[in-house]
Length: 198
Image 1 (tube, rainbow, N blue to C red):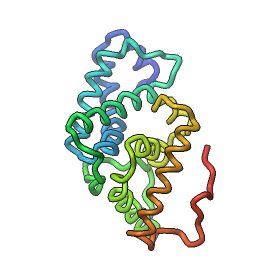
Image 2: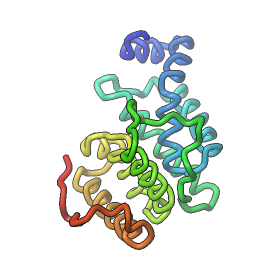
Image 3: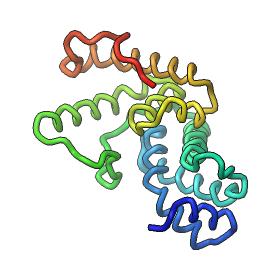
């Protein structure tokens, strides 16, 4: 694979081969984030197509002094939320992850931990519709995608304290849902206030 920075520079300069390679490189990431917002595989594909059209049209606006992925996440998040709103819908529970959608983690747990992870994914898929759109995006970007709080703040164009507040609220909503509907997944002796994050 070519150097991503060089690929981005060539794409910005109008090299269509570089644009196409960049799209291939980022397609999984964009579809995964769009899916986390829309809760629908077909909608995520539609959103990702729109994102790549926007990417192609706006690539000249990209500031190379900033992280490309942060810029792309912002475009994807905004496009997915706009897509859901334009259809007059609310965020939906996430269905079970389609087999076609690659998992984010490189290693898969085995045995009992795999069952726990599968149960947690199923619970999140069900409970995620209870989150406000910004809570859901903060949670997905921070806890599912594994981004740092500062980067989530840049993507969402808000202060880090706002991201932390969205995360706090999201965790409370999800914890209440877990306690009510999935009590077996709530760790014993865990407290809502426990555990800081960066």
